[in-house]
Length: 261
Image (cartoon, rainbow, N blue to C red; front, side):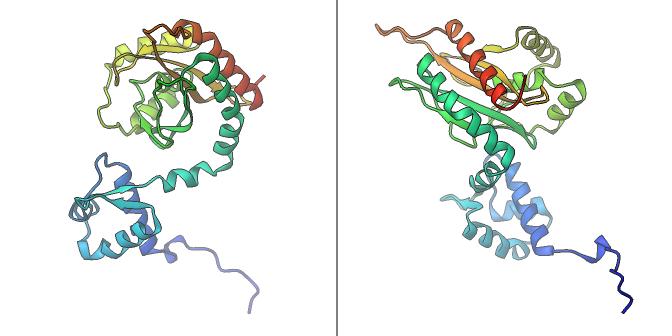
């Protein structure tokens, strides 16, 4: 025995089953409507018999699920695992009490989103205390250029990071891709004002108001959005213009909790 530890040779170590399982998850993450076993086989370049057992195991573990037409799709299990990751957990723990306060003040629902691996993802959501509200499920993936939250995240990063985000973004079902010049003008306006206000490009009657959340380094790491629904009955609630300072105050307070000066 020489007492020396052999040099690690990456080519000597492989886990084919793990690689196969990860490939299945990656394909499903890029599929809006899920995939049948045959579609997975074609996308992966493997036979059905090669992937069948792994698909069944992933389903048994709760990472994927099949609908009545045997189309497989990701569940929220991966999202929940990511949600336990310390930076995300710290962000949501800092934000939730203030989001709950904001929902009461503006009588609207609100949510917090981040950009992760090509997607804009909802990581915290608070319902409005009022009877009428618009809420989004945790883990919901949103458009990037056609949403107020997405435009906030795009506006407050440097040119290189913005180009990377747009290049790697995986469009959601129904997402509107804005012309480059139109998007550029809108992002410039968001940077100038410090927030985003836009009519929803998904639902009529909703005005989205979004503001940035910064970390201790001043980097924008998340966006708070209030999907404002105007009341037309006898009950008067704050207008979209009136909730803007409330939203900006909340975003600033969350940022301070995260160490931003």
